[in-house]
Amino acid sequence: MNVMRSAVTISTTGHGDAHSNVEHSNLKNSDDKDTEKRINKLKKSLKNRYPSQLDYIEAYIVKDLPVIYAVTPTYTRWTQKADLTRLAQTLLHVPNLHWIVVEDAERKTPLVTKFLKYSGLQYTHLNSKTDANYKLKADDPNWLLPRGVAQRNVGLSWIRKNVPPSTSGVLYLMDDDNTYSLKLFEEMRTIATAAVWPVGLTGGLKFEGPGSCSGGKVLSWYTAWKPERPFPIDMAGFAVNLKLFFQHKNAEFSNKVPRGYLESHFLTSLDLTRDDVEGKVEDCSEILVWHTRTEKATLKQEAKLISMGNPSNPDIEV
Ligand code: UGA
Ligand code: MN
Image 1 (cartoon, protein in one colour):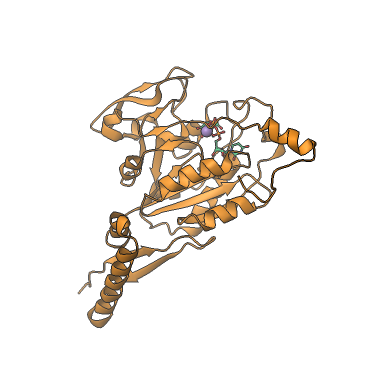
Image 2 (cartoon, helix red, strand yellow; image 1 turned 45 degrees about the vertical axis):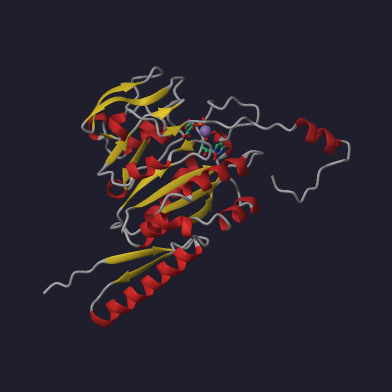
């Protein structure tokens, strides 16, 4: 006779590269009761310590939620910590999310290392420097070269190596400077194969991506620039089920695609066409993610003071 097994996954907050999930399979009899007792004790103590986080704790401990693997490329600039702080504090409200942060750097920087350590998130910290041929110079216009390609690919390789293919979950590519609504994460958690939704403030439009949907079917696309792209959509406008991702071992990002084709290249490397993707978020009628961009901080006065030999305290990390 088959014994029904229910798995409870307790995700501890991130420590380095460890995929820190502790699995408790409820067997039977005394093992079963012991586990239940321990979980109840843990729940009680967490609820006492963090009363405002009840929903979050319930979601972590009681429900067996599919995991969201979010891959974020990031690079050093004055506004990096501000952008990462805003993003991390959004992610703190999302249960069962594993954040894969990939620095565009030769080595992991102390700033990001410390930032992640105290973030309270479950994370993996990686790095990969963009090849000099593909790296934007300080004064280059930002559209000249694709950004975040090598970093996303390193994140994808990490998932392939470290996440058991049977894991129920989705993959989402998150830039470090966008604005994300919490509702979006609950929409994407249950994606069957691949899904799309509109992204606000992109493509030179109010929004770009699926323009109208009905019962999960995308009826039309709202786009003005290069509408012939297989998927006229921003990186923030789609997520895919892990199963589909694992089925396509060569799916990846490429620097060698025409401008605007990063997303299309990746989605077609998963063998997807426009007809295969589900339209999500109130039939694509609501904007839950915005392609916001942080103004570049040039700090001219700071440079002036440094040149005058009167710099600010170098120990203050901004
Ligand atoms: C848009 C899309 O939203 C991006 O997903 C896409 O990668 C990009 O265009 C592109 O065409 O390459 P945009 O705001 O123009 O985004 O790009 P950024 O936000 O500047 O960069 C995207 C991601 O790559 C960010 O997470 C950023 O931190 C990272 N990045 C940027 C690096 O890792 N290295 C860099 O030198 C620049
Ligand atoms: Mn951006």
